[in-house]
Image 1 (cartoon, rainbow, N blue to C red):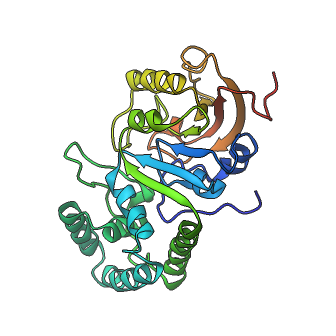
Image 2 (image 1 turned 90 degrees about the horizontal axis):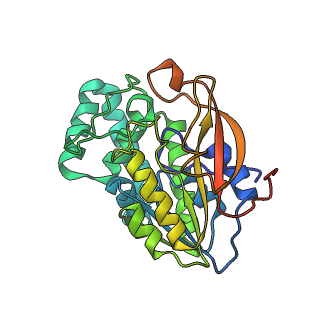
Image 3 (image 1 turned 60 degrees about the horizontal axis):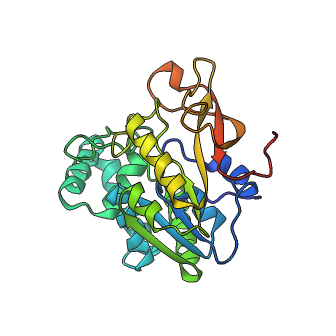
Length: 284
């Protein structure tokens, strides 16, 4: 894959650098329905661009934005007008305006406000408190929405608009269990759950119990699946790969992360792609 498309939503841990490797190791055809129970930004499926797909996430705000684009309630032209207007206000009023938009979003859940916050908050994080209020602080870059930056975002939205004209894609806000249950044995499931033992900022929490539920749901589906997770770094190893996911085939790739405040979460990481079929890059 020569060029990787970056979606409108920015998410920490985005799989941009892994898209090519994932693409080389999946098994789908034009009749396969692609399922992503943990959509996040959607970078993997949006780049592989299968004809049929179901993108799901428990974060309703990501789903709301993508559905608004799909249903043409939000267009690239609307996004440009919005970001130019609100970006100018941010430049003039600075931090005060960011928190005004954050409060407004937490009341109205406007998808355009969500896009604004995602692109002007600290470190591009998406984090909510226990009351499901967006609570990421300001990035302290008042001139964040420069002309070039707005054009970059607008082009990302326009590319998604073009894809949606020719694809049969659904965006759903639901649990991973509900999404996996929809898949038939002839479909393909790609899972990018929060990395157990590492992520603390997911819309919902993630723990060992949920990791077990995910494994059971995937095995019960009978469909081919691929799971993204972490294998190891210089500090520690993901012990669940050799225990919970021991039935899977594994391929690795080194990747550098800037995630987290602690030093141990901001180093080179060996990624793992786990499958229930023999991938082309697997070395037994």
